[in-house]
Length: 402
Length: 180
Image (cartoon, helix red, strand yellow):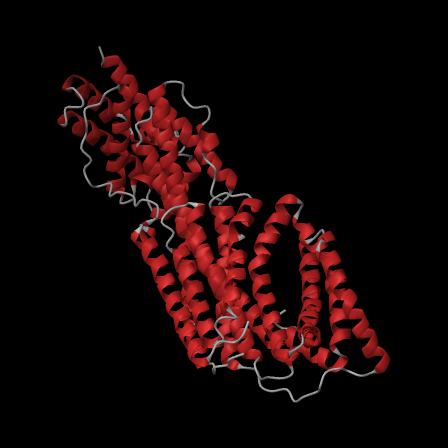
């Protein structure tokens, strides 16, 4: 997507946005179908690449088509930018729900009718372009892309990728929530993003909105880096900040990158490239940090858990049996955080003994939760720092009041 | 919605940025104050730090204290954590990995465990947790354990805390013999 967006925009400009969008949506739908029925990872990756080409064509060409529909280029820019921000926030929640309720394949299969439905109204524009040979877009000289706005977009996208992907990972792999449970939890972010997008109309200064958004995203990520307990409710305030922040910063920077520049499709293509490149760079930078931390925290949590067992007052024979079962669960989970509850069943009938075993279980679970949560902290912290550093290019971007 | 006047727009911009800074600092500050920076797994204790014996309430309690104290002593002598040693004694594979990782020989391990067992009996006796009537024969028994038998005690491990099983097996049997 990062590589295809600008070339796709150039094609849209030459071949006509209607035809490009229609072909893009058809390619997107076909590749989505291929993703849904893929039985090998290599096929899935290949189909996803093709889907990115179709998506790039459809998204950039749509920016050329929007002004005719919504009445003005300015309004088209605002809607296009807001749609991108909302989509980014909505993706993980919808994906989690579909994965749990149906299957991961359904994410791709459901894209097919949606893409085809979106293509229907565009076909008439495409037919008009094909019949008349007239491209309804003024072929203006392509200006240089807005460097600082796009750099800032890449940086905040890297930070937002951490918020979206790492939080889902923390909830599912660290805190053992089901995909649908995690999806419900992270749905707070798109809801907050909708709230954030309503602020756009009240503050015309795009640079102020971008700065405020970057600060909120960083603050939210800082909160996720400093979670004081493994409780889902504690992720909600950071998510609200990230959600409002991402709506503000993505739309403001996209508007700044597009403001006064033509043609819109090409500059829109640059923003798409910057955002996706930011996601890729963010994940490339954060994944090694995260994997190293999770290995270290696992070791620390096992050590702490061993200490809890050794110091427990539970009868030695029962303790040995429990330790063996917990050790088996750790092996079975192959590096994931295990659910240790079953290792403690059946609980002793003696009341005092049961109380001691339950205390041991709680203390052990606490150590595992601490390890799992802390494993994500440095990555969230680094992402917060990247988000804050985005204030530099935001400060350097010229003020555009749309 | 009509666009706000420039001055009003500027005020709103400052308000938005200021509000964002306050919200971000507030969240980070509250989470920090609530212990977010220290929400990590508990650090393991120094095995060389003396843990006082308490008067055992039962044989099980004695066995627990005996096991922990013996592990502490051996871990201290080997320069590793008590937890790492306990995990190492769980299975032969874990023990091999442990010996390779810390560059310790089987003999050094066995020597450390045997010495620690003897020290544990001394400590228990000094703390009044073990009667001299029990301590002396126990000490004599442990002194006679050949090196390979000390390793056998370790090799008998079959779970995370099998070291404790190894220590407590003979100790427990002896104690039961000497208990009234």
